[in-house]
Amino acid sequence: MLESKLEKEKETLADKTAGVAQDLLNHVGFSPTRADIWNRLLVFLAILIIAFLFHIFLNKVLVKFIHLLLRNLKLPWENYLYEHKLLNHIFELFPPFLIQILLPIAFTPDYDNVLKVLSKIVSIYIVIIFTHIIISLIQSMFKYHLMKHNAVTSPYKGVVEMSKIVIVALCILIIISIIVNIHLTSVITYIGAFAAVIVLVFKDTLLGFVAGIQLAQNKMVKIGDWITVSGTAASGTIVDITILTVKIRNFDNTYVFVPAYNLISNSFQNWVGMYETGVRRMNKSIYIDTNSIKETTPELIEKIKNCDLVKKYIADKDYQQYLEMISSGAEDVSTNLGLFRIWVAMMFQKDPAISNNYYQIVENEPAIGTGLPLNFMFFVDTTDWKTYENEQSRIYEKLMKMMNYYDLKQFQFDTMVQNLKPV
Image 1 (cartoon, rainbow, N blue to C red):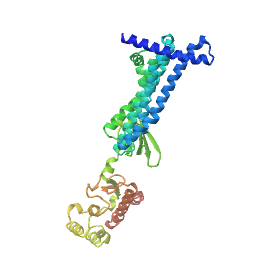
Image 2 (cartoon, rainbow, N blue to C red):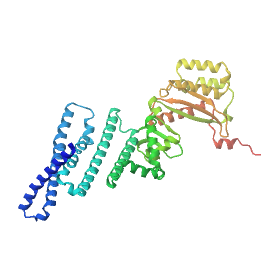
Image 3 (cartoon, rainbow, N blue to C red):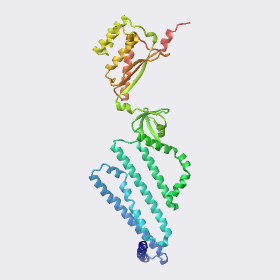
Image 4 (cartoon, helix red, strand yellow):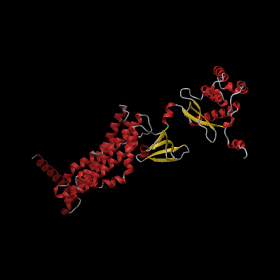
């Protein structure tokens, strides 16, 4: 009863509006036989003008007023709403809704086909605006997340991009259902029949989406991390993370694009722990010529005692302890290599560039065809690459220099040739 009453009121309003329009058209000389369609078009044009003016008021006046109010309230997320025009997109919904409501006034049931076509166009426009609103909301929330965590970007970037793709795909499905005049569930059912094909076509996208979620939730990587991916040429800093790829800038300023799923399915090394601790490990070996290893003699001990460089790199107290150890004839210092190994361990404890908070190891490894490896493992108090390399070279050169005072030689192939005796 109420609906029929409203329909009658709409028809009466439409007839009155059309009558006014017809009088105006008669004044400008249009034929009475064609006046009705022109009346409808004139009313429709008036509706569009009203909707346009309403749009101008909302987006040019009301939006600016709301942003000014929010800015005065000093809300931290206001800039991100303004940047992605979220309020503008929200207020853009009102004009098409107004047009949808007023369309029956311009076109009575006699113009049912025209009314249906225009209603579909307006509905499609409303769906597109809704899509813009959701995407703007997601982008605003993501930017606020970055600001809150004081980051340039985030592993969630891939999740955001995938969400936008899903929203746009859903928008397209709704538009298709409006155009062909079938229910959305029917469209999804038809597409489900081609699910296997869709999975094959969008395999990388789906895998990247899953990988992006896992990378973000497990906090495995982030922008700025130095990673090394096994099986690839990637060894550098992450500069971008998308749905499909992780962009890595190597230290030679080349770029490597690694599929995001590879970081989940395969192993990779993240050096972020090194930066967090503030130290970096040095692990090197000197290959000792085994022919130069010999038992300690009183002459060698006296030579070491009188060596200023030995004293220079060991504190006085430690030096006295060192002299007692080498004079006692203990088993672990019965060779010149043992004396040198103990001196190296004590020197590491004194060197200002070497951290004493982490392990320091000086060990002999099994002999190989290129000599006896004397291996050094310790941590340098820096993560700066240039400083680390300088300190590493300085310490290594110091060790090489001190070997001569212990009558030790580094293995070299020319040494091996000299020691060969003719058959």
